[in-house]
Length: 143
Image 1 (cartoon, rainbow, N blue to C red):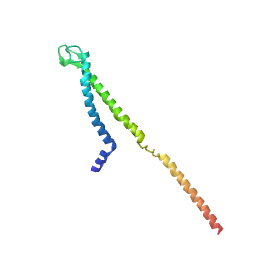
Image 2 (cartoon, one colour):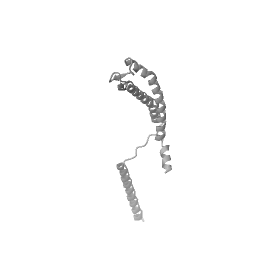
Image 3 (cartoon, one colour):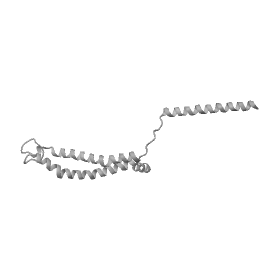
Image 4 (cartoon, one colour):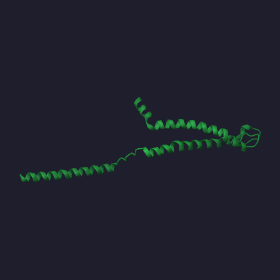
């Protein structure tokens, strides 16, 4: 039971996934800090005075009815930045390394190909057996 669990953990994909999650989480913190420090103030400039930033006030005088669009834009920018960095920093170099140094897996033959190979081997064996029988007949006839 523990051996199967150990084999599961030691597979390359699980280790790669764990590293990617840790790196993604760490980079997300950096991107969030950048968006909160730079993007949010820029979006707040677009809002009117005495408002909570970029958004729409549904009922005047009630801050609870403010629909904030700025955080939605910030979250989208966070996502795009994290996805872009993960792709260009992790995925592309790994793909390049795999293409350059990875081993290519030989395609396994289909059942039809295996059956054709077996048929050809059996036909060759039958021909060899027939030739051997003819030679034995000739040797026996010469005695």
